[in-house]
Length: 103
Image 1 (cartoon, rainbow, N blue to C red):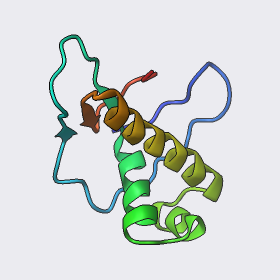
Image 2 (image 1 turned 90 degrees about the vertical axis):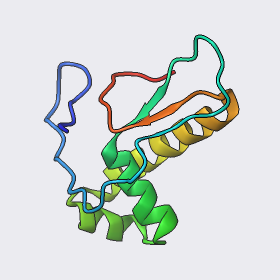
Image 3 (image 1 turned 180 degrees about the vertical axis):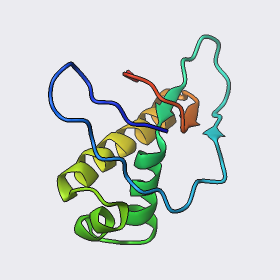
């Protein structure tokens, strides 16, 4: 899955190395009608695994994935926000699909 830059300027982001793909592809909370799923990409899931599950520092996770610590921080903040939004809003969390904005 390729990551895309947002907007029309700047360099293309470095493609992070994903070592382990998650077994689950989605989390489905209690169903509500008309809920749009929240999409979290594989790079965000990998950062959650490395930092939150394996306890690596952001610098170590960045080295492991071949990206900067700043990018790790951004991916981690985005992933945590999406997981929290899914839990508190009761929206499905889809893993690995590409999307522009989940609000």
